[in-house]
Length: 401
Image (tube, rainbow, N blue to C red; front, side, top):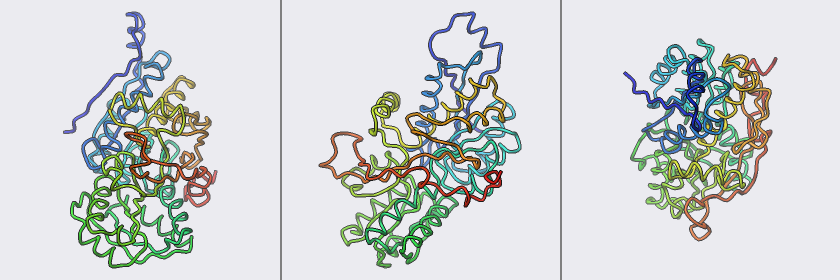
């Protein structure tokens, strides 16, 4: 049995007549399928549910004649559990869009369920390029990053600075493989070389043997193809091994604001990474992030901002088309520019990839920070056209139409 939590999100007070009007029609239901309790839960999890609720609130709690409901469930980072929940949501609960997924194996499994059920699915924290590549489909969208976007900008920048030999510590499942593969491609194309890699299980805990191998390689860069507590534990233990003091550079290929907060600036300072969202970038992002903070007592990660954007865009499409029919809604989503706190001028390609700017950031030193959560300095804006894999290389038949 799976535990589900359902939250009806209704904005403002409604008269009895209005409530009866809403009851006469099936609510618009959105399912947030995420890691609620595992090693990625700080960067997605309950914060993703809160972001979806903010999007529903900003839509007025309803679209014409229909209330909006946000459902949530824990995918436990398991493909079979994620696909079972999605199947139940589409079949029994009338969910129009499943958003989140947050794990490559879960994402690919749910994408196939959505294909069978003609449902809309939006991946957020999913690194595999295959989601919008060989497994692409008309109602599947990828909103945040993929392994190409996370790795190519960092690799090019660091190789150009002379950090041209790399060693990978890679979590041993599809997510890690995708990151290592894309980063290897980027390093080599920039003129660097890869000296080796070591694979570790998810939630490894002890990274000592892997770090010994990485240190012994003599690589200038030790890249962490992992995320969540795997990444933060590796950084902490690398500090204990004196790897950075010895002259090697630690580069997490996926690092969220919540990870930096967990590490603290003393341990995280100097890390260079790619992100799609910086909460302090504009007046608009600061205002929205403060609303999120009031709910969660933490600033949003890029994943939380992406969930808000995807749900908002979906609800606008439902309101515009007057239906939750998947084909009609996705057609409107694809035809409409995404302009909000997450994307300045985002456009959905035929393969389902939302193309938006990415940001190369450096983690500040403690003395540079102006207060809690002020951790990142934007070094460079990477335009969406350069941040993501070219559409011609995606391998999606939809991109050829």
